[in-house]
Length: 279
Image (cartoon, rainbow, N blue to C red; front, side, top):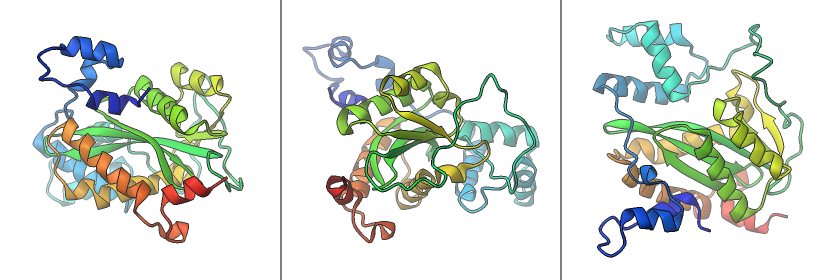
């Protein structure tokens, strides 16, 4: 079966012979997923989030108080509560210069980080998954992607206006169906990746579960670099108005990223070439 995003694209809203309800049933697609729209926010909040998104790649160690000083200096009337809410919406993960003394709730904790010191030398040895915020003209959406660490090949991705565990799990499931399963899948400690549905999928496929330390986005550095590349080379250069146009634009760009873009870190080969050749 084709990945979920491709099945959504097969639905024809103007088909007079087969209703949308019937098409969705045949393609195993949720009707709500066809009509995803950017999450609504005030114009000022969208501008703040856009600036925060770009700032994160330069100053990922900024926390609430530093962001407050930054925006007040720019003339915004803003408080810590508002910044904290926007950071949560965006999934901002501050990098700390030293380990935090705050303990993670033992009932909520998760799995160790398995990549430290690991020699990653073949495809499908380690995949990484993450979610990022995407600014749009009148709102924002989320992008979830899975990348093969050795080749930098994007094996799966999807866009949504909500960060559900089911959505992330479906993307991983489609990637496994298309490319086979990895030995290890690394993520952060977000609720999507500690959910029962996600963990069960990995256990069912006998995939080792690896998770970043809290406040350590650098543990997932390869997919953080992917976000930077996508945003600076594509998202910030376009102003998408709806989820469908965003999806089509990302599909075109990620095809270029995998198949044509030559990466310096790969000795100027493309991820697709390396993925196809790798053991």
